[in-house]
Each structure stands twice: as structure tokens, then as C-alpha cells.
Amino acid sequence: MNEEEVKKDAESISMKQKIIDFLLGRQAEKEEEQGEITESFIKYVQSERPYKLAAAFFFVILVFFIGIPMWYLTTSTYRAPFPTFPSNRSITVSTRINFAITSDLLVEDVEKLMKELETNMTTKEVVSPLEFQWTTKYLGVRNFEQLEQDHSVDVEEDKEFFEVFVALVPEKDWTHYSATRVQLGIGKWNFIQWPVKTEEKQKASSRVTELVSETLIDIPHLNSIVRRDLRQKMQPWQIAALPLSHQKRLVWDSAPLATSYHIQVIHLHENTEISKESLKKQEITTKALRKFAEKVKGVTRVEVSSEHLWDFEPTMQFLAKDVQERWTLTHEAMEELIKKVDSQMQTSLEQETVLRFVILETTEPVVVLDETGEDIHGVAVASWGAVLTRNEATESKAIAAIRIQMGMDAELSIGWHRPPVAVCQWEIARARLRASVDNAMRAASAIRALDQLAQKISNIAINNDVADRATRAVRILDDVVRPGRVLNFERLLEARRLADSANNDHSLLAMLYFPMDQRTAVLIPLAVPIILPIGKLIYSIAMVLYRGFI
Image (cartoon, rainbow, N blue to C red; front, top):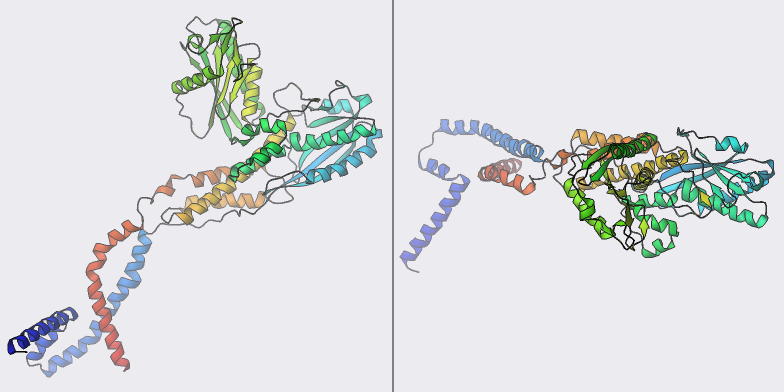
């Protein structure tokens, strides 16, 4: 190695050393060492050293223990705590079946029936978390005529049980048609024709079990509500195992129940002069629906409005004459009619389920045909409304359609008879029970959905107001949904509204567009320039502490 190479190596080494000394702050110390340092200067430096170390120490504390936590707190999403409703918590319906007889001869039969009924009801399929607690009560001998005349409409909720009322009537006292085995009442009482023959009594006992489970309480519909809220699909074999009457109404039972409905009665007019008689008939239809709304106000709020579409020309656009020279509305034409009405009616109603009842106001009678070409009185479309024609039965068919939409209709077996009224008291009680279960399930599902959102989305904001509404909903559920107490309709409705408002609050989206990578991008330009000085300060403090201990 010659002298030039040695000089180059020395220059490169010295250059590297200079860079290191500059980064570590040693360059100034070396320059100071080349000059003469007085004793007073040394003492001054030594006296200032503790202050420099203290300043460096507090600067590190300021950055790491105050600056970084403050950055995290000011940029992190605020999460107010709230409780949740456990998914394994059961919803218990305490049910009491009250029996009365109209003759002393049925005392032994009713006692035996009550024991059999409690056993039979426990074998019914109930979807978890829904549970039933069954009990029976004998109310003694009552007068048949007085029970039939009991048409009370007010719903009295017991504090401990959901109650149904069944009366056994011997054949000799039965005033209805002899082939009618079950007579549903207008009030709370329902009547069973009790036979004399022993072999027929077992069939009558089965009718009582079916009456309580399938009609007065409607367990299959409650199961459909629970499955819908839990997102459980029914297997084909489960559908096939259902009775034929329940298979027909499975679509309606699966439709969500609303807390309020707005019915738009839409009259489709031809391009002809409207008579005063026709206008009166249209007003009668609206009044009939409003009377029905008044009867069910204890279950749900129903508002009725009337709309008119003029020059719609349904005869020319959607109706056709069949071989009998009748104007008919086919199934395909009805689908086009619904689409045309939807395009014409733009609703701005909020927080209500809108049902459109389309009535064809034609001068000549119109017959509606189903998909097989058979005559029907009208069509009810799930979660949409109904299509009806103008005739003498328009009001009754409109009420039947709203009953179907609200889940109040039921398929009755042969030999069962329901009185020809808009709504019975036991139907109102059943609808309140159904709505209570639905509100409890919907409220619990909304609270759990909000909790899952908070767990899965790191930057979703939950403010104090949202957390307070969720907390109040959970408290109501904890207080109401427990064994030994009847499901309180009003309180569960409040819990559902609180839970839905908390789960759909617009403030949850406040910070969804400011995720962690954007918050880090804001911090990097501020943090990078001070990383190196802070690292040097930490090194200096560590060396001083190390030398002090050694």
C-alpha cells in the first residue's frame, strides 16, 4: 500500500467520523478542545449540565407522555359505553288458559281436559329464545248466553299471564249450526261444542289444543317472527311438515310487522264523468278503513288517506274481455298496473309502512283473475297493498286485505266459524302478544347489531346520546322480558323505538371517512422532524444515567 492510498483511507475515515460526530453533536466539542478552555468556562458548563439534562428529560416527557396521548385522544373515535342484551336470554311468555263450562255435567271432562292440554302444549315446537310457560284455570259454570253477549273490546292485560278464554258447551245447549264444532267469539270467549260420546271427546280435546296453539296464540306465527329476526332459514322438510293452512300463510307470517301503517286508497278513474253516487261510495270505503283503524289503535297506528288518479283509463290499458264478455284483470295485467301506479305515486312519508290499496273505479263490473285464470275478489300483495274492484263487497275486501297485511288473518279448519265482524277482542289480544314478541326481538337484535358494529368498525362513533338510548332499551328489556311477568306491549314498543333510533342514528357515520391511515398521515409530517433530536436526547440521558451508576 503506497502513501496515496493511506491518505485516501485516512480522509475517508475522517469524513465518516466527522459525519458521526456531527450527528451525535461531538463536532462542537472537538472544536472547543482545539482552543484553550479556561477553568471558569469548565465550571460554567458543569453548572449548566443539570439544567440541560432536565430540559431534555422534560422535553422527552412532553412528547411521549403528553403529546402522543393527546394526539391519540384527539384523533381517536369516541365510544360511549353501553350494555347489550345477551343472545341466549330467553323471551318467556307466561300463558294461562281459562276454562268455563255451561253445564254441571262437564266438570269431570274439563278437569281431564285441563291436564291433557298442559301436557299437549309442552310438546309444541317453539323456536328458541322464545319460551312458553303453560297453566290452566277453571272458572266454574257460566251462562252460555251471557258469555256469547260479552262483546267487550277493551284489552285488559294481566300482570302475570297472557290469558285466553275457552268455554265448553254440551251438544244439547249448542245454539249454532250442528256441524260447527268451534265457534270463535266476538269478545274474549271462544266456544267448543262438547260431545256426549266418549270416542268423540278425544277429537274435541284435540280441537281445543289446536284452537289455543294455532289460533288464539298462533305459535307458528311467533316462530316465524323469531326465525326472521335471527335470520334463520326454514329447510324444505320443515315447510313440508307444516299444516297446509300454515304453508299458505308462510309468506305473510314472514313479512315484518310495522308499528304504524299509512294506507293510501288510490282510486283509478276512467275518462268519464263521475257521478255523485260514485263519489259517495268512495267516501264509504275510506270511512270503513278508518273505523277499522280506530278498532286496532291499541295494537298499531293506522292512518288512511285518499288519492285519485284521473284519466288513468284502466279499461283501455289493463282490462280485457273474456269469452263471457266480462271485463277482466289478468294476473300479468295486474303486475303492469302495480308498476304504473308506483311510477305515478311518489310518497314522501317517513317512518311508516305505506300500503297502497288500488280500487278500479269503472262503470262496468270487473272480475280479477289469478295466475290460473280463476275468478277472485281481489289481490293482496305482501308489503305493498292490494288491488280491488268497485262492487258491493269492496269495503269488506279492503278490510280483509288490511287484516292480511297486519298478520291478523288466520286459516280456519272445516267446522270452525268466525263471526262476520272486522276484528274480535281475542284477535286484538293475540296481535298485542305478537307485536310484543316482535318488538322484543327487534329491540334485542338492534342492540346486538350496534354492539357488533362497534367491534368490527374501529372508527364508528358512538356518542353519549346513542349510548343512552341503547342503555334505556336494554334496561326495559331486562325489566320486562323475564319469567313470571307478562310482556308489556307499551314498554317493549318504547324499547324497540329506542333501539332502532340508536342503531340508525346519523352520528354513527361521523368519522367513517377519517380512518387510522389518514390520521397517521396527518401525524407523520409533524413527527418525523423531531424523531432524530429526541433520539439524541434519549441517548444522552441514558449515557449520563449509565455513567452515574457506574
